[in-house]
Length: 226
Image (cartoon, rainbow, N blue to C red; front, side, top):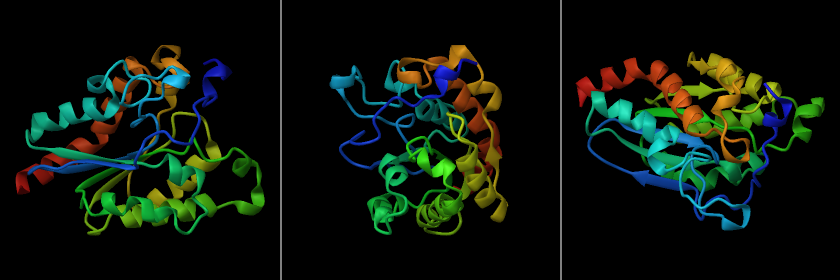
């Protein structure tokens, strides 16, 4: 894997005009908490002209929609929402940052997939005096999004190598007995990347498959209760 692929070169600010996107329905409710890989709005000044997970070639091939294709084979009425948390990543130490995601909390998701971290300032990784601050904020976001306390939550390492952040996320997952998903062999491949060092269609499909492999039993169990 080339080291150049480990640089997130997309500006963290103003990735979308809003932070929460909901598409409710009658089936299993799945919430994706993520950053530009989950959804990035139009930004022609950097050469990005699609509204989907960066850098899929179209909406249908980003990991969210690929995952939902798998989910709807189990529950045709499965629905989803997106909490685009790039602003949280940038401002996780601001006590008011969580207020941006109340609408996502009100979605009352049955399943939550938390996949982010890349937009946290890299200075945090080197500052041992701040160790644990991101993890604490991450835990608070987890609690907010799981408003009913009943959601099945899946945590993922990031697409970029950030061991400090990944470890703090892993510790939260361990605390609550929830899965922590690693992507090591996926992100090591050169063929998974598209524009801006973000996952292209191949990478998006691999990510969707990995997440679904963990979430499939929970979707099946929930679909039987609907």
